[in-house]
Image (cartoon, rainbow, N blue to C red; front, side, top):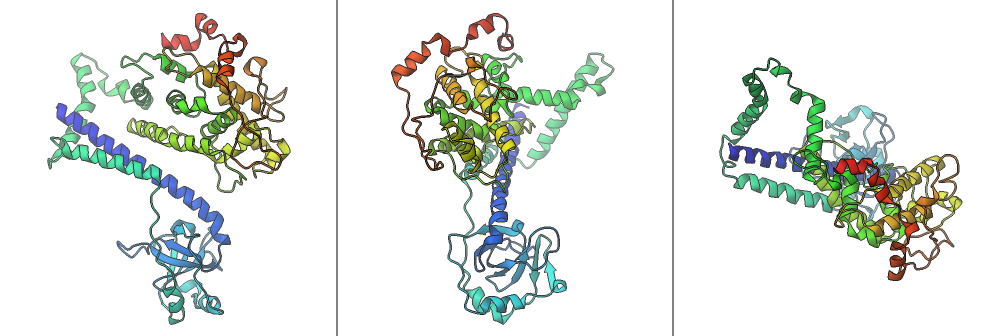
Length: 487
């Protein structure tokens, strides 16, 4: 029975890893579609495209094509485009059928009059054939377009992004573990697993009946709320937030004090990313915008991205996000994990001292949304100094607590904060100036700052200053929520 149980865990892991792989591919696909929706209407005729093969072409490879124009009519509310494929097939497609827009490949050369000649070959509405997806095609291939079709380059299939390739390796490793299991090669392995699931499901009812209980069929273990609680507990236990007995650990008490969309993700980043201690306050604010703000829209304009050090740290955090996502899915949880640096440049610019008027020129986001965005970052920053301490330097470092206060102080400016709707108390602030902050991002003219750094002497002086840290011991002695959770 032990071997069956271990095989079940391995197969469940394979299922989870495959689900994460599908999720990452879909996420990457949605990003591409958003770019295609914005760019295709403005692309020139002759732009090389890579399209999905026709639905009736079983096992066919993607089709290289060139863009003709926006379709003169549309079968539905979407925008459709006309294209000429390399095999001389005329097609009408939406962005959902586009695999790649090769903007780095030269346009297909069109001689005078060729574009008009191909446009004249487009059949009327009733002669287009549907292939089962968001694609129409013309059944007839005309000699008049053969010359142009032969000049269309053969485009390669785009490579998978790094996070997808990494997840593919995890799937392959999990599948190898199943194959190497003593029961993995048996033909009746699926039946063994099914039998084990039936036995596990029936065991609580059998035990209750054996104990003389009359309501076995109504066992609380079957309720959705209880299953959700057990799934969440199992996920937290896997990350050391709970003990096997269900008690909250000291790290779990710290994570429980975090108010974020996914406190587990934020907590793991805080305690497992030593690079955060080395960030300047403006870089720290920009990084936390990636995990605090989830306002990604394809129609948003942002003039400049953040510094490279911020982007590098966001990319480094992708692996942590994927691991937590896999753990959640393994336990049947679907809790969003935002990680999007779209607005990190805006946050960094505000922390650098850019004026409100200049900040508005850097994005198409409305003023109210922009204020709400910046306040969400400040909400994360003001939490960090107040998080419960964890013994033996296993929690949030003192340097990160101080730097979070500096970042909060830099962002505490009107109209983001005021005396009525959003205020930051004096005890949360820390004297710091944006003058001298170092950045490699592009700011509005006149707003580039010089070099900034905290010397060892300044850090030592800050750490030893009584008015620069909160009195956490007072909260603990009075039986704060964090202390009670850790007991």
